[in-house]
Length: 125
Image (cartoon, rainbow, N blue to C red; front, side):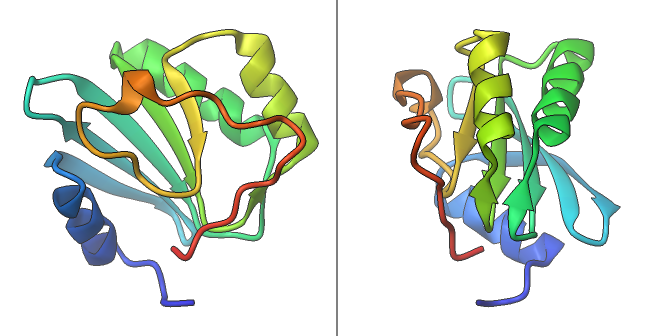
């Protein structure tokens, strides 16, 4: 598994068709990317480079999306999402948040269905 770096994340976002507005490395294993698609839809992507993502991570992203008034929020993980993380995402009941193992193409976030709650997601980040 390649090491996750800010530059790698920027390249992946650009490859998926996003314009990178800003990046922040929040912790040694956590980044926040502010992205725009071709139509100007605002997306926050929180990247977690660790084996298990929990409910607190989902809540953190939901709060950032709310405070920054972003259209979408994506929690991108290099590991799996805990059952509690999946339940929290479902309980928040918003179409604006997604748990993903790969970054969806720009302009397609709203068409992506939520993942099955029983299936942990894997990524090569």
